[in-house]
Length: 197
Image (cartoon, rainbow, N blue to C red):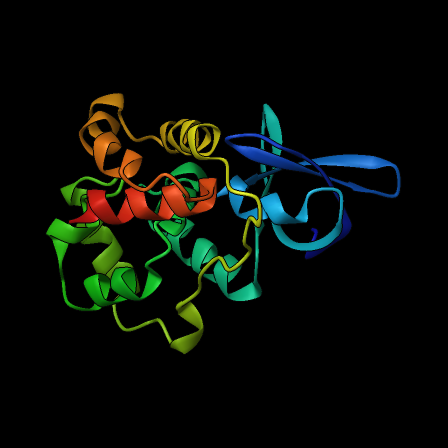
């Protein structure tokens, strides 16, 4: 099993990044691919978790060990798969997530894509009181070259890839367009905050 990969970031898409290490390109699914934009063509360290299924071997990547630990806790809950766990992590308000779990806030938890009332209740049952300060993690990589329309388009595409419906994104698009100088990562974070209200 892999713990982390050190390599050159060679590709960013709405759902994954590619890290080249020892002449091998690793396709790694991440919560917010555009958080890595400022690191393009640079050497990066990414923590990984491999999921092996009959039809696929998939790598999931994280900016820190604590983010990986949160992912592993989430996928341990019945009803939460890796894709749903990434969508939850992408919201980047992990303190809010932990508070919601510890305070039985089902309404907050069901705002995440793929999380219904039954799954939210299971999250509370399995995870309440099990987080410490290392559970509060966030993405801190910054894109230094914001391009408004392209950045917004990339952000919306990434949000759809995480499972948010086009109708949900349409409701917040005007609010996002009112902030023309954000990076893709910032648009994603802003959009998630708007949808969690």
